[in-house]
Length: 320
Ligand code: F6P
Image (cartoon, rainbow, N blue to C red):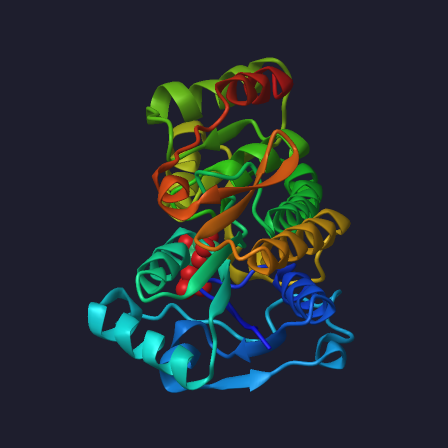
């Protein structure tokens, strides 16, 4: 039988398990032999590969993390590593591979495709930072986790009349920061995509808010900007408002995936296998205008998406 390998690569994200399950179940449905590869490309290089069955993906749809485990594999960035991976794929009779991960992981997949392996990428990262896709698996769960944390922080900011500064993940992208800023009513959101001045963009809105009667404040710092502790210290120094910083960290990467992440993972996983069933490879699955589509992998890697300026404006108006 034709065979599909499946791996998760890069940072884990809630919903990756739902995507693995979709690949395994739809793969077997279409008559493929489906092989799990552990720890991302490391498992491909090392031959940490095993056959998966319908039941091997039971009881994982609701679990965060990835049962296949994951890694950021440095050797796979070299031609030697790619060749080792391709050789091991031949040893295990893998003619196609589904890679669930981010841009970096798709680059590895593209390099592997030069060795005759049909690859399909599925966007999985909490950062939502994949240029070709409006949505990445894990993003919605992370948003909800950050929202929950920030609602709690607001309770105590209110009680103490403080300024709370929260640093959220997102690598070089500010999607989590901006959207949670809107959902939770942050006074200030600092994004890596937009230049800002400390006095004009942080202190001024806080002081103007105080003049309009505000007594507590929320500032979100995207990790691509960084320095939440320094931001809090500086706000307190200049305004006299007692300030506290929280760096949310890896709590944002875990947890049971939301409905949106599970359903998207299901749709994307099934689409990836359908392509391979039709003999089509070297594609990235994406969400565009709300629909699941697939894009040629080189083209997909070239694509860029912007942060929505209207949303940035809206977040300022809503926090007046
Ligand atoms: O890509 C997901 C992400 O959580 C980013 O938001 C963050 O920059 C990075 O991974 C952290 O990586 P690590 O888990 O390796 O520290």
